Image (cartoon, rainbow, N blue to C red; front, side):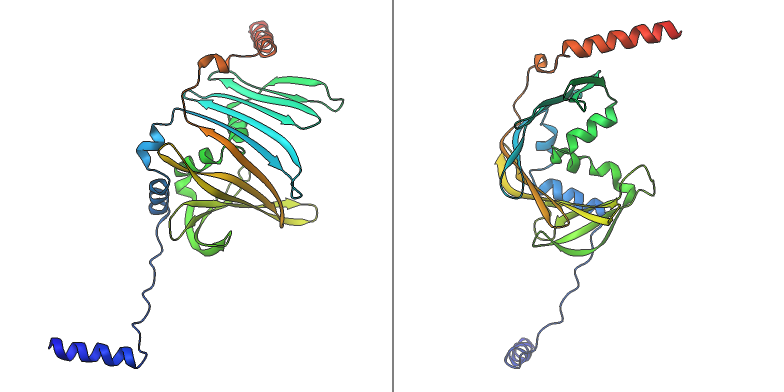
Length: 265
């Protein structure tokens, strides 16, 4: 019997016959997310990250540097970000874990300080620290569907459609490598006066940071026009609480709010 089977297989090979291709079963969103976490170091390695510090430079398509970023986050919701707009000035935002704030500029280039809510702070952090965007995706699992395959940033990927059915939230697509399951980026469609604009975010330049494998370049592509954000420093070492102390201007705002609330009671 084995001899006959061997002859059949030999004949099929010589005749150019091939076994029919096996269809790759489409994985579920939770399967993809679990494998994606494993691909960058695993759940345990992520859990052990209690602080995160990065330094980045944003460049236009022609290579001109426009924004320098220093972002530090620590356990308990502590955040400090300093954004230096080259040739213009600095803006900042942060939190001591309780009070969240932002310093920006008005139309005449004067500093403006204000208190912001946690949702606004989270959005600001995720626009810079895309690892946080990725690690928070499991919270959106009920809105996810793997709706197909697509070549994204020149790699074959599984495409997850995240549809919120909520006008206050922007629908998005998340892409994961079919080979490694690493997160490869995100896509959103923005409404503009001139029609829809496709905004892709690509994760590139993967390097080791301790026990994690992290991307060190983020490319923002809007209808083909690209801006890059490159990290030349990423650290998960512990950070001192003193780094996240509230600025004096913010303390003044907190006092003013407390007085206002007392007067309204």
